Length: 340
Image (cartoon, rainbow, N blue to C red; front, side, top):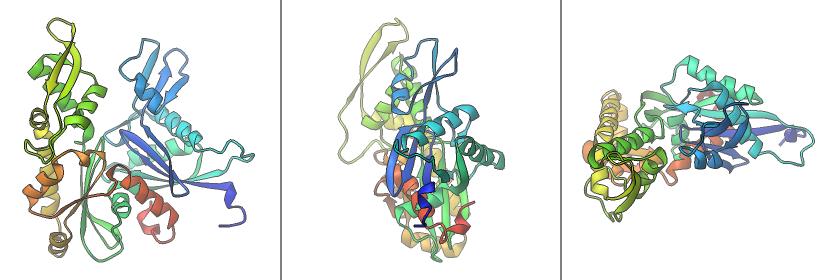
């Protein structure tokens, strides 16, 4: 720690489609949904994160909720800047007389374009960052899981978040080959909404679908410790009257099957593209799963059945990427070639 270290504040940010996590001094200081609520007339920010999420789908005409990220990239530049600024403010020490210079490492999907990369950097700079570095999500996930990415051993990481599914083979501190598909948690949520509409003639909102996914979501129709049936409330499409239906995990597994098959196909495609020496390593080390959507019941077993490889779920999949970003920030000198 230098004499003027208090003048610089180092933040590791996992800017996710669904959740934004900020790590400061090795601690998670912000873990909030990536959403803001604005007044339509004035553009004034009413709420950010959890408070804005509680308003989502329940607003009147003068309030709108915006999710600034779509498919892992910034879709609304100004809203993203507002959101980053407000979340950084949550980390601030109220007693500080001198606002410190902000140094940030932000993780980004491996498949994004230079223009989308620039948008992330610009948003962070507009929100007050003096120095912004970027790290690819699968690399951050691998570091967060505890893999020694600098070793000459191949490791496959599958990071299934809200907007993207990142599949990468990592060796010698670099990504040897990667596949990034825009099918992830948000698509699973949409699948549930669509299924409820077609099968049960009931309209449900995004938050309800997310709840169903957490409570009875499954990747297979046979899982260990199956969850109890879940009561879903929504609007009957025929009568327009609110109604309740009971769903079970087998139904939801059927609803999610198509999207999960696409994730499986992307994993198999990435394995096909892997050099033979690294394939031999992956046969021994297996596949590592990270990201919130990897918590889906039976997903680990389904990928194991498809690939016949060992599949390991990260200890805390939701925060693996954020933790890896924090480690990369802390060991800036060691990981210089990983960070853009």
